[in-house]
Amino acid sequence: MTATILDGKAFAATIRAKVADGVATLKSEHGITPGLAVVLVGDDPASQVYVRSKNKMTAEAGMASFEHRLDADTSEDALLAIIRKLNDDPQVHGILVQLPLPDHLDSDLVINAIDPAKDVDGFHISNVGRLGTGQKSMVPCTPLGCLMMLRDHHGSLSGMEVAVIGRSNIVGKPMAQLLLNDSCTVTICHSKTRYLPGVVRRADIVVAAVGRAEMVTGDWLKPGATLIDVGINRIPDGDKTRLVGDADFASCVEVAGAITPVPGGVGPMTIACLLANTLTACCRANNLPEPEGLTP
Ligand code: NDP
Image (cartoon, rainbow, N blue to C red):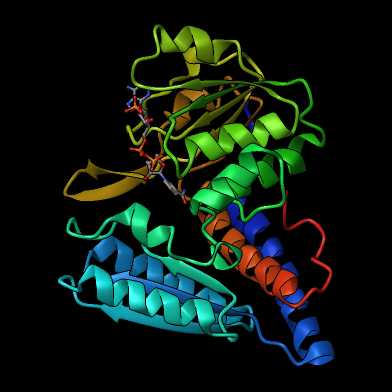
């Protein structure tokens, strides 16, 4: 069997187009422009690339983009003051603080200072709790993108067995919660899971969010399973490097029923979902109906 390739790049483009339509309607019918503020502290090269890409896509969707680049030695008080200002700014509907923050800053404190209604990353403790109790919340972008791809491919996910590999607050846990809310039977795996391949082999859907290059191999999979590969790992390739996922694509594509490639799978969905969340936050802030298909 050769798996269907789930094309995240193409799917993300349809989500971004839907967001751009929603933004155009908000502007023409209500005179409102959704705005996303991105706060970057320090000069981590990967973060700089993400922030550039986010700014470009925000502008392409017709949204306002507000960028705050701060020195690596910015104090916690100064950062919190900026967040308070953004919380109070009616032109800003979404606030994203790029992680990781420099070591002297308390990420939890900073994230929990964001107005939960503007927390487009969905990391605020109040949004985590709301997601966990099935209430309307802002949902973390990467798991939201994975859920959209799974629903698009399968339709209903009800009753499916899922193995989520990874229990981070950013990907694994919210992913598991979203799938549980969709009535899947979810097993969350981590570094202490005994005999991981055996747990994975039971699953109709596998979500790999581990951060270990090509760890999941085809012989771990139930034939026909859907594999969502969240991993982004850079490995040496001759005198260059290349990106690979947490799954060994060559062996998994022969066993899976459907698989996301790396690059071009989950990655593009993450930014598309950030834009979707910003539009959703803007609609909610203005008591307007939310566009369909952009929230869980
Ligand atoms: P973390 O490092 O925060 O979490 C990794 C998880 O994997 C942990 O729960 C850890 O277990 C588990 N793990 C590590 N080694 C093993 C192992 N040998 N067997 C089983 N489980 C293991 O990573 P993130 O969740 O932040 O990211 C995961 C991957 O997804 C990374 O490659 C990252 O680059 C990528 N990513 C991609 C995004 C995208 O847009 N496509 C967005 C965010 C992340 P334990 O808790 O026990 O330590």
